[in-house]
Length: 356
Ligand SMILES: *Cc1c(COP(=O)(O)O)cnc(C)c1O
Image (cartoon, rainbow, N blue to C red; front, side, top):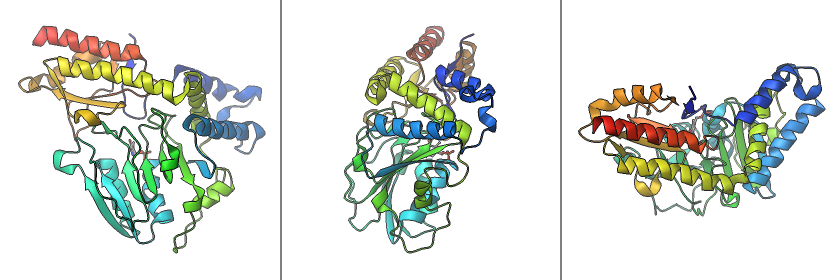
């Protein structure tokens, strides 16, 4: 049976990227050697890193003055590397959920943290708006898409202080004005590749301003100076990411994917709003295009486990909601085809005919 992969992360990748990866495991670039056993300091692999960087730049329109790095450690390592490199006195954080909270916890190890806005009062079901940003912050940190709760900023905010964004789960899903950010980072495993590589886009001039000594691996300047090869980079994940970036370009780039993502999300949200059995959990204006969260409607709560089983029998994979929200979460990343959303919608309609 055809599977429809709605996992939140690691998550669906373009089929072509998986096929290229499978080939390269046996024979990388016709070298007769597996991608898993080549040196990262070969011309062929350096070309992969170079291509991935230039595709990232092209697809996101990254201006001069910004560096692109591919590192290990996941987005969670950036939670402490960001304040390590940038926090001298005080940083501001917007608290929009678990990932923000983890970032806040780490930043507190390095200086004062002011939580300038939070949506904790309503279990992170919305994005705080119109909050004041103090001018004396070293930087302001936001999480642009809240993977667990299904909320997302739909435009780039204006910040009078350097803006740092965790874009783990919405990078490349929509156009972004990179010039509004001092730094953008994320784990690749939601929308750009397999687990194991972390992307960092950083405006070079903001670095080197803190007074504390930095461990070599933590100092972004060392990674910049060595073109993401300060130590052994995650070779295999970078290769798969590069193939995914090529696919993004071939699909018409970020704007084209944004249009498709909007259509996919509208299909599913319309069904959630129409179907008597389900309700969405996020505030309408802040609904994520990437992670679509819904629960059983009042009166039908006891059907949740049954719907999960019902959908599984029809090929749906990974739609169980995060334990903090409950219900269901359908992650609709770039590589998820529209037909998978249609299959889920059909499944919800069939369940409604049986139960409502
Ligand atoms: C998944 C996720 C993380 C954690 O990423 P790791 O690579 O596992 O450290 C951080 N932030 C957001 C928004 C995420 O979705």
